[in-house]
Length: 162
Image: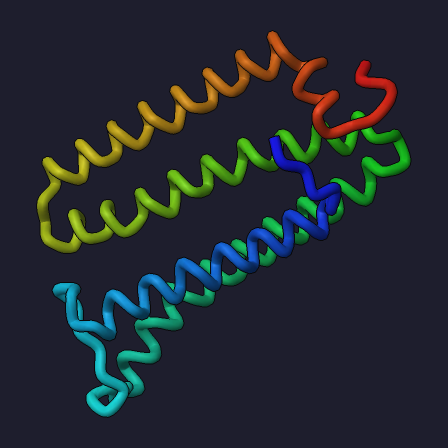
């Protein structure tokens, strides 16, 4: 394994770089007219109704993300008094929780499109698939964390892993 010994700062830098690279890849793909979607700044003329529809979806998502980040920050701050191993547990739990949030983010548009198109059979299938995948993920991760808790926590904490 390659180690840069940058800790949290390294993770933040890697995240920012990966997001910039993926944005450039998407923009390159769209602007080269290779996708089914085409975009032109000249043709973009938002209406009040369009902005209202965007904000109806965007503001709750923004608030959700802000509250999630705030709660993780507050939990880590409160746990810091109890040592590295407790912070490690909150970090590991946060990772699992954020993956489930990812399932939710993927589920929402598909469920919304299915409901809007009145394709209720597809909606039921999406709900069933989402429940199966998220529950399976939680069971597997919970089992792995229970069985290998000391080994996992030792990756995030120095010293006492009890």
